[in-house]
Amino acid sequence: MKKKILIISLPIFLLVGVLLIINQQNIFIQKEDPNFFDTTCATPCLLGITPGITTEDEANSIIKENSRFENCQEFDNTDIGGVRWIECDEIVIVPTDNEISQIGFFSPGLKLKEVIEKYGDPDKMRISFLTQFPFSIGVQLFYHKIHTQVRLISRNGIHYDISPNTSIESVTFFSQEIYDQLIKENWIYWNGYGRYEPSSP
Image (cartoon, rainbow, N blue to C red; front, side):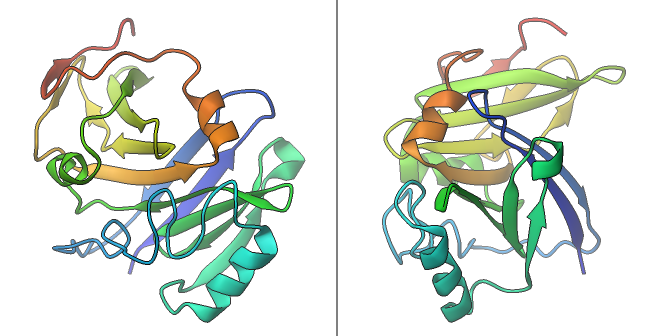
């Protein structure tokens, strides 16, 4: 059984930041992720919830009625400048001002080639050092039309080799407003599979 703690920070007028800390044992890797291949509605909608459109009340009703939302818990980081969120196993939902601003899911079994087969090549990407000594690199891919961020699994080193079999950590759909904030700066263009290096440590 796996345990995870998700701490989400969403400062107003600043970039969206999400810090994920996962402790897990005996991870079960699915051959086909039911969230990624969900056909309930078109991306950026997931299981009937669309960021920027679905209200918090509507989302709560969907969560109660849909058995895919399991073991749901509510968290609140507003007292330290963060946000409220709902975590249902691998799915995370963030409400802002009575509207769902983002919904995403963790998917360690998903591969980048599956993402590109479904969404196409990303419009932009961001690569940066997450930690130093040892160096750890994080990569995020962005899809403008569907307001989506795809986060690759982090790796140690000073460069990041991206291949079709690179594992995905999470996929997140945003409202238009939050997505526009997210991609304002520190991005580069996708240049296909290959080696990428952060600009500086």
